Image 1 (tube, rainbow, N blue to C red):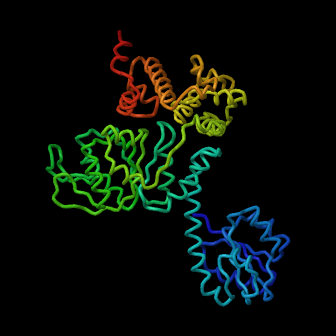
Image 2 (image 1 turned 180 degrees about the vertical axis):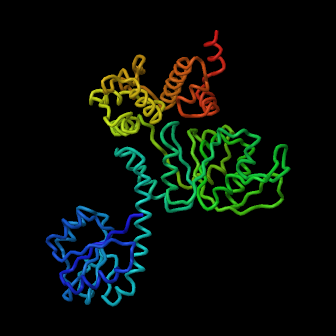
Image 3 (image 1 turned 30 degrees about the vertical axis):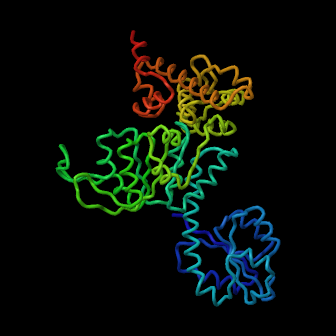
Length: 451
């Protein structure tokens, strides 16, 4: 791991020697000293320390120009000051420092202070690294960043909601970035008769084929995070058992008469409207409230189109097949912002990947992104006649557009539900579930294609 950087600022050589001596035998830190206050700002910019330790003289004089410049340019900068007469410091300067101590106290407490800072610095670095994978700088994403940062330190259950393809798993990983374990359960991919065994495990002889004991995913994730993806697809009969495990913090393997304690943080995700699922009897209200301690909603790509140029460049770098990065014109990028991307970020990623595969002259055109005719739009929506629509009409428009989109993709894939699901990056069962929710009969569509 990188060493924690410390900048020492003092105009007294004896003090600089003292501070260097404090850390001389410790290999975890990288220290630089500065005796010139006028040069300290440039040295800070170059060195970018985790903390700056400042010697304040006996008259309580602080390097005000340095502190004002750094605090304005780097709001997250941290300072540790020590002085022989801390009582002479003005209140505004006392509030700026994490700690005021005499040199005698510094030798005793500085190392403990730095150990705590190092742990905080490491945690912050992991969080920033995790958040950097969520691309975008629009207001919607900035709000999402803030929510994720607040969710990371806690242990309450998190419910992530958003349409397919918006990046729910990426957000879940960001929230769990400081946990030692991250176990994923795709609830839509587990057969109903195997749910209990998959989650809680089983003992030998519990059922036909159970030739050995097997731990479940809850036990595997104990001490870390269990990500229940597509929680809306979990069978109703299984929901009560899941609820009990969450409430009691214990599981019972199939076939066993003993319970096991587990310590797991739950992050659940779904593209369904769970409140509506509760109304029609498909999801338990008590389980919903147990999961919805920290709610997170990820906006669809059509509501954050300002991030499309950055996402496009990110995917170009990801899929470029040579050292020379493909080019895409501003005009083409702007054209992409006119499309509503019903498949969200996953659809955009697949489109850029496909475009790179078919482009000519190392330049991406709109024809490379949409090999067939560019998608058409509902005139009422494209003309922004929102005033003529109520919310239910808008929802019907969304369903109609999604039905048309999936129908077209199935026809492109020769009627294959499996290949269509793979092109979306989802499982076949998930595509069946989606089709059922929007009123699309895949069986009839497949038969029609084969006629």
